[in-house]
Amino acid sequence: MYFLFRDQAARHGTRPAVRDEQRTLSYAELADRAEALAGSLRERFGDDDVRIGLYCGRTVDLVIAVLGVAAAGYTYVPLDPAYPESRLDFMAKDSGLAAIVSDRVLPGALAGIDVLRIDGDDQGAAAPSREELPEPSPDSTAYIIYTSGSTGRPKGVAVRRRSVAALVRGVLDQYDFGAQDVWTLLHSYCFDVSVWEMWGALASGATLVVVPSEVVRSPRATIDLMTRHRVTVMSVVPTVFRYLAAHVRTSGHWPSTLRRVVFGGEAVDAADVRIWRATAGKHCEFMNTYGITETTIYVSTRTFTDAELDAAGDERGFAAELGRPIPGWEVAVLDDAGVPVAVGETGEIWVAGIGVAEGYVNRPDLTAERFRMLEVGEGRPACSTAAATSPSAPRRRRTTSSAGQTSRSRSTVSASNRERSRWRCVGSPECSTPSSPRAPAAAVNRCSPRTTPVSPD
Image (cartoon, rainbow, N blue to C red; front, side, top):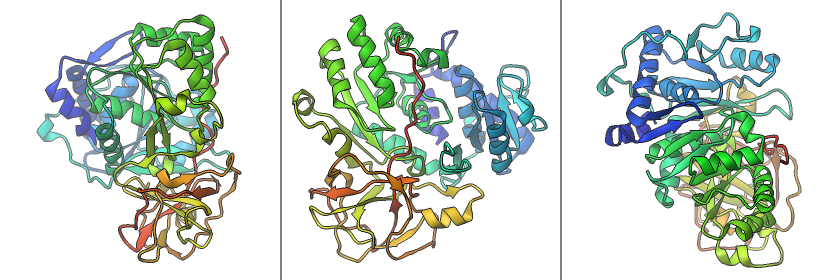
């Protein structure tokens, strides 16, 4: 996974890789800093399989920390300094942290854990050469991100390296992201969209701009930052985009370089997109995504067409048409017995494939319940998300994981979300037979919105 970035650093060392409001690092400089951190970590832990907490603000140091842990071959666990100490204490103990990389003094809840200050002189080791960097198994854990805990105690979702690499390669191969782009890191690194923002930018040779949390809360400040840094790619939750679009309309000021907006986390409101286009013009593409933390951020993507954005009428299709699965992800629409539904019938979306997470940390019973091996009758069609549509606004209810015949043979199965929706199969050329009659899958729908509080200025 680390070499997604390292390959770009080897080819384009002098290009700007990451910047915040104070400094900019080139690809070569970022690689040097990350690998120095990796060397310090490996001096302490060697080839042990350890989990490293990250307790950092939104600066260049955060990106160094993520890359450094990845280069060392370890698992990173994000710990947001804005979290209550009780949550930090739970996450640190539940994940079994061996150490914490930080740019500040740790709170009392994290006292007693070995700490390496990334902003100080703790990185005493020389950076290992590329040949000396470890080559961890693709099936080893890249990161553990904890869910919000809105339905109980937070659950740590463990995601493999191969899943992240497949997501990044799969999306970059389908869209024209490139080294000319400037991306925003708009989300907290405790939310999985940040994984796409960081690795998507750095694996394509682009420049990543780390957006301070106080800027994210202000539409005016966010638009000003995007304009100043000539941002071309922004990933954003639709609720936050609504405030940005409203500010663009009232101020008449927008980032003219922005060429692609990647939505995730919630249903898109067509009205907000149309407001932006009416003010800023139609050169920007709007890309929708569908997925959850347990399926490595995204399952499917699609780009809204000019025709549908210009059309008036029913806007529910924006939330219902989910696009095509990313290569390596499989999607089916099944009934309550786990059988693929016929065209026109209503069912539940199930996901399988390379993006399926390992499971929940220290929650074997819940993992067995949510991550399943689904028996699919041979020859039965499975609808991709391109063939799924909602008959109305999704009716949400708690997931019971009641899909048909299942077993817990392996952990290579998709996790169901806490809530689910019913979807209608509308038929599509994308419908296909699963690659195996025994397909790993589970019912999913998008997690509760990962929004960032904003002020309507």
